[in-house]
Length: 218
Image (tube, rainbow, N blue to C red; front, top):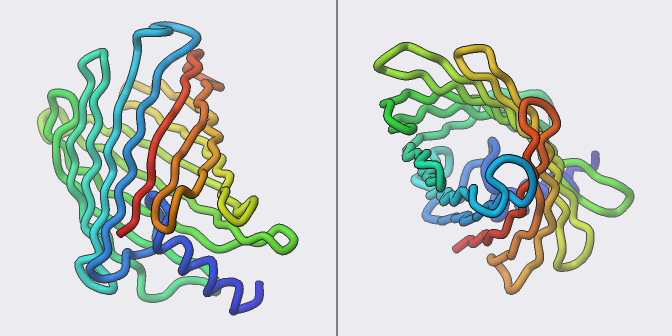
């Protein structure tokens, strides 16, 4: 990929991507607020989940973040984290590691993670590809839940972007899941997007949910 295109993609990601290995610019904030409502499967019309994700560029290399969530079934999470990039990575690829601490449901947890990403192009359209992995370790029981998200994003127009994410995970008991979550982002004004999407279970999850959210960079 040409270096100019790579630079353009990295600048786009640093300002708009909702996670990944790219550090926030020093002094910059990013927030993503989203709500999901099940429309098919167990809990249809009643099962909902709201998330608030935020990042702050503490330095040019260090990103502080918070990951909050609350569900209608009394599930909740509150995790703060610190993310740093790797010094050396393969060409055109960014990698980062992070460490979070907080509470998920009724358990205090430590949450280490790793992410990798790179810019991509489809014709004359720029986009990105990321892989994000997390391990949620209960400080009370030692149980470890694993999660991995695979994301492809693409600029589809001057003010629209398409994002497709495969969400996977496995809990300490061995139960796994896989969900497909496509969405479209509409730019309202520079730094602010509306996200509309759907999440559908593929394995270990037979629900379908609608998603509505906002991305805000400032």
